[in-house]
Structures are given as structure tokens and as C-alpha cells.
Length: 208
Image (cartoon, rainbow, N blue to C red; front, side, top):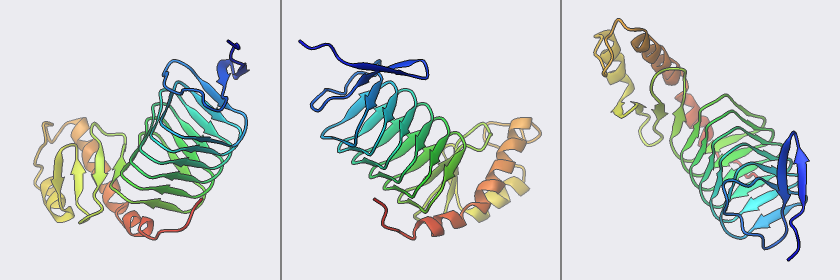
């Protein structure tokens, strides 16, 4: 049996991908030296692709991901670290990135999108589902595409209902004079200003 080739980048040892290799170990980092299509699902620790990377199934990265070309994922995508895509990105299912995200080209997300760190998109962005925002408050805030409602954690209301909620100092498990409450209210106001993004991301543009 041939020993797997390895390469070290930035102090991280990667196994160099060869066609047919199983990608189902979240403790192993994978390096793709060329444009690559993965027929099934992909699970690994860190991922670094020198060219285009296409995953026909879902993708779960426990660490960070760098793709120096375009990226396509046929299912959902979870990246527990940060993500840098130098080309275009097309994810047909939901996407969750727990660090920051940089996409130098266009981005198309077929389902819901959640990015917990900062986000930079160099080209056009299309998100088919809801947009989940992490705005430095206690709870996640979601912009709902179907009727432009906003959710704070599990509470979903219209904009007018939330406006009335905060004017009347109603509470969700937080006293209205607490620091967390003030952060939640300010984050809601920021999210409300971002609702027009849903209209812009409805304007679909061919990507990859």
C-alpha cells in the first residue's frame, strides 16, 4: 500500500488528495493540488484547494477553508472556522460559516445563510433563503425572505410589531434596563436597515 503524500502549509500538515480518496475524517486536513470534483460528500479538518473545487454532496469543514478557484457544493455547507474563496461560490443548500468569510467573486446560496464573523463579497450575492445575522448581541437575528419578518432568537414578528415591542420596553428574558437588552435593541435596528438586502439578493445572476 502506497504511503499518502503530505504537504505542510502554514504549519499545518495536509494529505494531498488523489482521485477516489475517501473524505470522511474530520481529524485530517486535505490539500487539492489541481481542479477537483468530489463525487460524494466531503468531511475534513482543514481544506486548501489550489484550483477549482466542486463537491457534489454536502461539505463539512471542522477548521478553515481556502479555495483559490471557484467552489461548488451540491448540498449544504458547514465551515466551523473561516473561509476564503478567491473565485465564485455556489452552494445549493444552506450555508453556515462560524468564522469570517471572504468571497472575491460572485456568491449564490440556495438555502439559508449564516455567517458569524465578518463577511466580504467582491461580486454579486444571491441568497435564496433566510439571512441569519450575528450582530454582537446575545441572540441571532434572522431576516425572513417570505414576508420580511424579523426573528430575534425564537421570537418572530413583523417590523411594526418589533417597533412597538421596543417602544413599550417589552422583554425577552432580559430586563429592559440591562446591557444585553440595549445590545439586542440596537442590533434589531441594524437588522431592520438591512431588510432591503433581501430585495437585492432576489436579483439572481448566473455565477459559475
